Length: 230
Image (cartoon, rainbow, N blue to C red; front, side, top):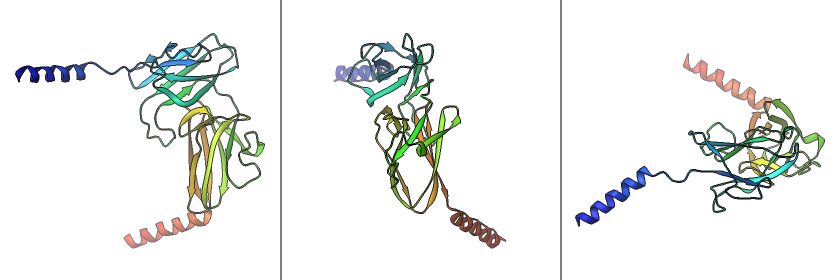
């Protein structure tokens, strides 16, 4: 009996002191899709990074982040990148769960390069629906790799995502990949919606701005509340 208890205690201690394999690698068209092709640096804060060199400047490559095997790989579909003028790109992988209001919230794949042109695609009941090169749906640069487009929409449910103009390289709740899943937006009333994509961090979000009538009613409610307190 003592031997069994001692064995269990030793096993528990080993389980606590030996960390799980937290290594991550880059595998892609730049290293023959070797799942352990390039080890990423552990930054000791839940993030990992690696600089890929020797690429063709401005050329698009597909890749994944792996655990060194094909047993675990991010994202589901291939991710993508464009090399800079020197044929390099820095890739980051964030395993932390973010609460900053941007989607996706975990396993974010970031780049230090930006394709430079982004388009909003979706089902808005317009002639430009799902047109990945519609000039009317071009997202404007806000600086720092962030792009935005505002639309006034009626109450209803809409699907959308941000794509590199003229392609299906996209960013959505499931990360930076080829033809990501669609985002879903539900409005209970007419509103202006600001659609954002952060090309460097690999995330998207919406900000909903109520119509002026709604804002006026909210303001009136606040005034009445203050008067009641007096």
